[in-house]
Image 1 (cartoon, helix red, strand yellow):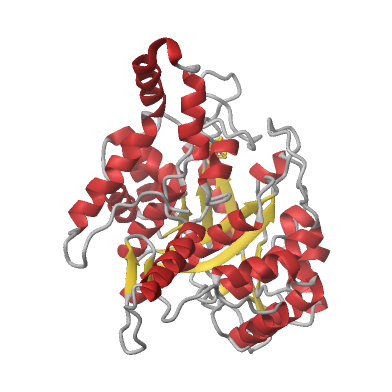
Image 2 (spheres, protein in one colour):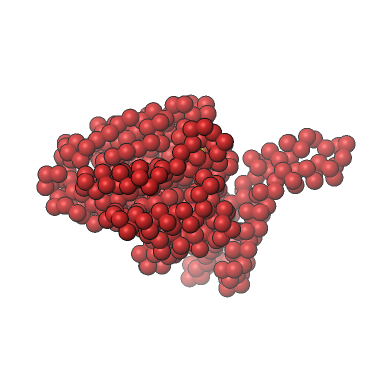
Length: 479
Ligand code: SF4
């Protein structure tokens, strides 16, 4: 049930109005404790503790129209329209959700007839788009092997050459100092901590040289939200990298971009334009975890919201930049949370592809939360079984994202091989270095030879690629 919306007739709202409304929502969300205090003060002796009102505002009410809410609204409006007799087959009506595209109202809407799992899988196999409700049914009821077989059929339809790609790059974590204190993170040190580091140019140069010597084509550069590093530090670093190395920079994450925008009092767009001018080639999809604020409030309350993460990606795509997207599971999420995450990504990709300027998601990757040493005391299913289910479901739901990567660093290369038969067409990276999931319990490392071995074992021809998924080697040629 959606209780309140900001709505306007088509054509009334300019982009500036939308920005103002988004800004008002962000400001409101930041002042929840203050509103709770004011409300308790107004009620005086009759008031409950302030924390009660704050909890209600923060946890009971949601402030976004996520996929589930949008589906509910469309259903409600379709039925209301039918009841009012405004329902003619030749009259097409749409609701336009500002951040998520158009949804048609259904003529003659009554309670929609649920399709069976088999029917939905048949449609997905034929390449038809599945709805949120259908995705939820698959999440709840589809058998693992059926889901995998249909995801494999979709993979084969999208990538019929029998080639599985991988990239040689290096994950460099330039600083571990971070103010966000995410409960699931075992990598960061607070600014006051003794173990904080920022990698020097000498250390970076050594890592970059080593990467080039190993045939690496890219640096995946990510770090914490370090309040000591301003935008100029990144611009210098990117310019220096481009001047001295022939490596592409797949750099930062929406979370780091938002941090820089806040630090410098600039818009996200301005930060992206400056970073790109300094040498940033593409933006990785880190910091998404689960794009649902119920989960985010639980696991990373000081980090960006779902809408903020998506807005950075939207702005990057508007600038023509290529990005990737991710999903981490194992936070006691429900099917609603997972499908909302996938639906928000699919909606944004639709929007970006319609712009046709080259800016879009190139790939999606999902992996299970690694709990070792983190403050998050959750017990959830992070098994290979669930990973394979979620990856296969993602292949079917994300019909507009061309590539799916397996996550062998968290589950091992053998599961990676199996993952290639559950919708994936890419074996990720050789991971010359990785510091984040490895600190929380994932310790798998592979050479290019080993990656190619696993790809062949699964029945495919290996080929190296870059971030744009252009092939750099002849498929099947030995590494
Ligand atoms: S996940 Fe990223 S943003 Fe969160 S604490 Fe760790 S380094 Fe900081």
